[in-house]
Length: 294
Ligand SMILES: NC(=O)c1ccc[n+]([C@@H]2O[C@H](COP(=O)([O-])OP(=O)(O)OC[C@H]3O[C@@H](n4cnc5c(N)ncnc54)[C@H](OP(=O)(O)O)[C@@H]3O)[C@@H](O)[C@H]2O)c1
Image 1: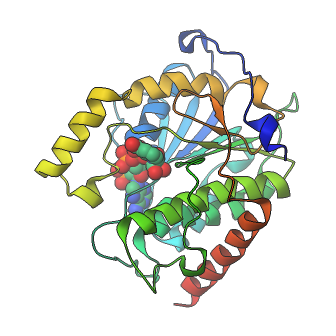
Image 2: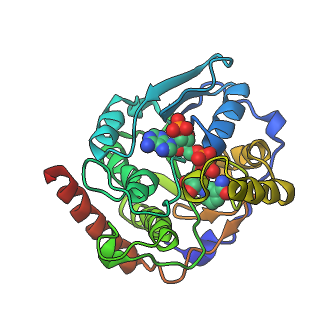
């Protein structure tokens, strides 16, 4: 994987309103809220067939969005959903499920730290199951996977304590999930040339992602989200900016690339080397194995 080339992609930008997505089959894991939902609604409005996975469906008003209900904090559920999704027919899978680690460590019934499970580990589990079943399109375009997180920020995460068993601090724990997502993109790009995988960094956008951390509807949350809303693009604008990239033919040869909030390619974090990414996957697999026997 050529990181330099991946950070200098000149993809052809087209107007979002010119997109015709008829016949494009997309799954958005985390497409029931926030950024995933905005992308789902926009892609559907341009003719795509979208399936969203999440806990609460909010888009009964739009025809064409299918819903799979799931609590993806459970790895057993993530495995089930990976099997239920029509993977063979999908051209694009977008992972946007996430929370922010709360002030106190929480554990799922499978013994996994909650943020780790929701923001990263379910993606790891689902991809392992789905990749062998993905198929290129008739005109030989590889299936595409987009992993949303915060790539390129330089943080490596606590690789020797993925479950925050030894130490828990909400920011450090969350940044471990962020590093995991970046490592997942890099390692998958190297190991699976038959598919394309990319990282998305949306920057700060007003959504519900920080509720768990700041407290839902608290004054802290209202102030932070007010300022984020004032100075950043909103979720719908991000969806309009990023959808032309998601379907762009120009990114076909750049698996492993990361993109910022405007869809500009950026450098991956220097510390997440190929070796480090591989180690992260090994530790992730160990944690998944532990969860199953818990
Ligand atoms: N917004 C930002 O400022 C920002 C900044 C950097 C990175 N990101 C990244 O962008 C991605 C999307 O975040 P967002 O801002 O759109 O967050 P959001 O508004 O909170 O949406 C998160 C999505 O995750 C789903 N979800 C949460 N817990 C779940 C669970 N246990 N089971 C199944 N689904 C669950 C939610 O579905 P339900 O509502 O149906 O539960 C919702 O669809 C995340 O990866 C986040 O880390 C966001």
